[in-house]
Amino acid sequence: MHHFITSRSILIVLLLLVSHVATADEHVLTSNQAVKMALSNNQALAAQGAHARSVRAIAPQVGSLPDPVLSLNALNLPIDSFSTTQENMSQLQVAISQAIPFPGKRALRASAAELLADAAMLDTDEFHLQLASLVKGSWWNLFYIDRATETVERNKQLLRQLIRIAETKYKVGKGLQQDVLLAQLELSKLLNVGINLKAARKKEVAALNALFNRSAYETIILPQKAEELLPDVAVESELAKQALLTRPLLSKQGKFIASAQTQVQLAEKNYYPDFKLAAAYGVRSGINPANNRSRPDLATLQLSMTLPFFTDSKQHHQLDQRRAELARTEFSSQDVKAAVLAELSQALADYEKAREQGLLFKTGIIPQAQQTVASMLAAYQVNKVDFLNLVRAQVTLYNYETQYWKSLAEANQSLARLDAAIGVAAISVTVQKEFNHE
Image 1 (cartoon, rainbow, N blue to C red):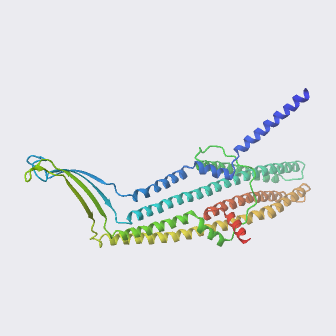
Image 2 (cartoon, rainbow, N blue to C red):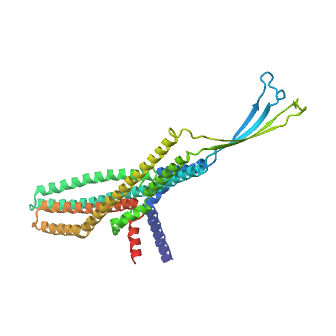
Image 3 (cartoon, helix red, strand yellow):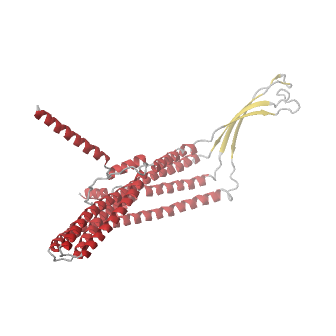
């Protein structure tokens, strides 16, 4: 019975521990989860989507016929009596008219509006990319701050150990008081770094929460570990080709050009007349004295058209305007293309630099610095190394460790900017290239 109770108690404790770990894991925010949260809750993205939907609703409006006009008329009433039976041409009339643009105009207007609606949707896709890049950049900056804070705490403990060693040696007459003061000074510097990191984390959390549409003070907990292996990416020429195909910003410029071309075609159509059809039915009352019969009702059919006589002052200038707008759009598109390629090149250069630096710190500099500190600490304890050099070596190791985490964060931030510049994940371009090569 006692064994059963003990086993049951152990099982309950294990379940509570597992439950606690699971609950804690649920509050840990990964980079992908941060992006999903921002895409679901960001109000600016929602506003952009609403704008795109509003622009989409324009095309059916401009492509429709104008509303018909209904008229109720009293014609040819004598002003002395206003009688409908006195005069032969007096009548009460109901008429309806419909304006009809020249064939092709409505289709061109609708096409131009549809192209602008497509551009607005692509603008939403572009906003999506930039928001994801911004969130990833903020997340990795926060990850760096957390790792730098851990490094500071670890080095504070090491410096405290050095202070105790220096104090012990000073008490027994084998050390100098300046060694103790020097170690305390370095510890104070680390305390100041910790204060700055704490303030920086608070600001970064507020910025990230703003992207999530949450209160600035909402707690954000990041995992203590992240993927440190940085992938290879394709060469710049391959990435540039992919960007020309998949970057929404460039596709949007193509839609703008097509819409401007359609506006030019529409301006050319304005040299042709628009039409109006009308039909009327007039009700007459009274007796026609000529034949002593009831006056018959009258029907009216009408076709009218505009006469584009003033083409020199109107249609010519309108066509010139549309052609100039097309040229401006084409020049702007080339400028945007150049900016995208420059953005891609800069992000790729930043990524390769940070990636190489991170690899150098992790595999070369940091292990060497750790060996140096361990060797100097052992030598200092037997009075073979100056304390100042030992402290400098430890501070140098701290700087290298924080620089490694900074390089890792910068590499991932650059990779996020590279993905946004291309329009797809940069790593997928390399994978696709390898697949095609095989």
